Picture 1 (cartoon, helix red, strand yellow):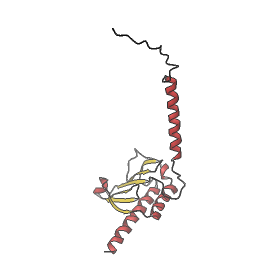
Picture 2: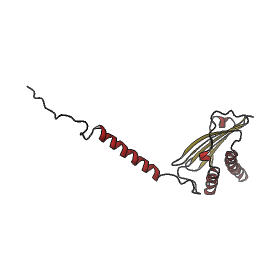
Picture 3: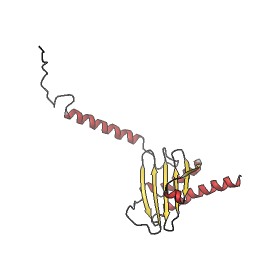
Amino acid sequence: MSKQMKLPPHDGMKSEFGFMSLFRHAATLLVAIGLAACAGQTDLSNAGLPERFSLKLYRSTSDQQYTYFTVDRTGELSYAGGQPAMLRLAEPVTVLKEEQGRGLWDLIRRYELLKSPHQPFRKAEVIEYRMSIQTRSHRRNVRIVDNLSADITEVHDFLFDIIKSTRYRNVESK
């Protein structure tokens, strides 16, 4: 003979695990996550390179010239030109010096590239840039065509100058 245990009647509103309690716990969790995210925000006015900074910049032209740069979180600058750039196969070239990293970040801040207009559907007639910038608290992917933002051209040229000076310095030292 088995005895059945009689459970007390269940009242969902008074239960510790009821809907209202679950709602309160979820709201508390969302507030805590929001506060934690605010505590780790990147100060975009800071002149130094922000924490966890990374960048990818791809350029293609109507006469089939391609360049691709990446700067990873350690400051390593990688580059590809031509077909490897089309395939986004950049090879490490150098690690940015502190003043180079600061100069790059200054360009991004000065031209407000974290707020650049995105042109996803506009057809490029001459030149197209695709850029991805990431910091600890910001992420921005943008497509700019036909030099409608000359600012991104300066970032491209800045990185290209670093590549050139590194390669020429390495050739001269051999």
